[in-house]
Image 1 (tube, rainbow, N blue to C red):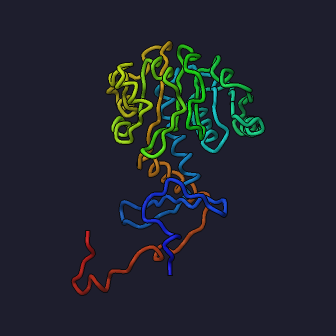
Image 2: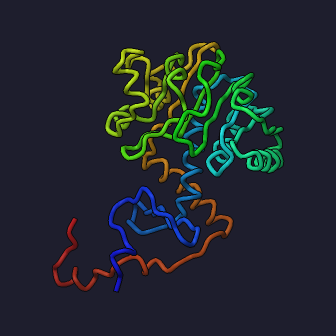
Image 3: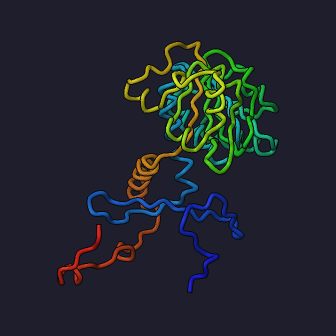
Length: 287
């Protein structure tokens, strides 16, 4: 007997676990057979797929000679996104700010060792912005984390917190969006359907128009030029996740784990129903 309070048939935005564990999974299926290939913890994969998209965006939008990263946040997302940026640009130093001193200091020590790049904890948002080529926001804040009036020419600003139809969130203030020469989104449609008012209110007020925006995909396939000058301030608002992120990152993780002998292998028949008897009688599964 499964009690109603234990299960949910739809996505839950908030589900605090009394065991302090994350129970989200991503299921990876074979396109050839339909067979379940892997169950991957969402907590790990979600940060990796966001980081992978960040890497693609920074390779396309940041200045090629970017050397300094200013980072807001010290959690799992901050780690994965910083790692991704360092893969596509020759980063020489990082400044990290978190509202909790202990967190930013521990993050700086750990990531300096992992990346072999100097990661320095700083005590203010202003210190993060000043002199940085890239400003990366990876926090759990629902309010702007820095003053956009302090942005400098040539910077690429990236945020990953967005209004989702339930919670209103933004890591960037109005000044950031108004001062940016270009605002790059993952999806314009999602900005509208999720009522991301942090962006829509400024457009409705005439502060700028949709022509100041483009989608990351348009830059990648050459439909939009993206950065045209090293003096441009560009704001990449990673405003939604898409399924292909999970599939692409999940497939790479699956193949890497197979090669290294990682994970636990489960019998595939546990996850598939044997229909041979029914098909033999002329009954076929519904599409």
